[in-house]
Length: 104
Figure 1: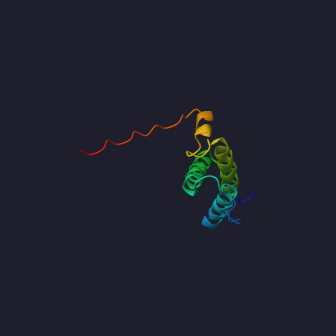
Figure 2: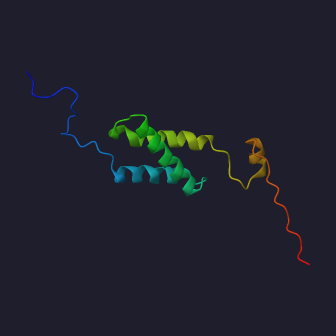
Figure 3: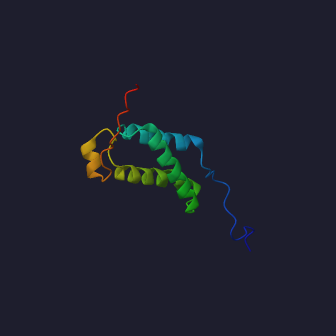
């Protein structure tokens, strides 16, 4: 009869999620998507990591899956706000900023 209990994880292999792995994935995403503001990339990656963990992925799979999800989400992102023709294509429309009245 084996001494290993059923349902007990094998702790001989370190499968913890490390900051180094997360940082390396974030750096790759930032380098690949120079057209997107860094804050947007980081927020998207952070949300992808959180949802990946909530979906029950193992620690060894979290970084790769979160990076894949982030790339997928960033690919769906509309273009920069400074390009009105792309904003129209995305269905956002051109923002009309009112001019302030002159002070009398």
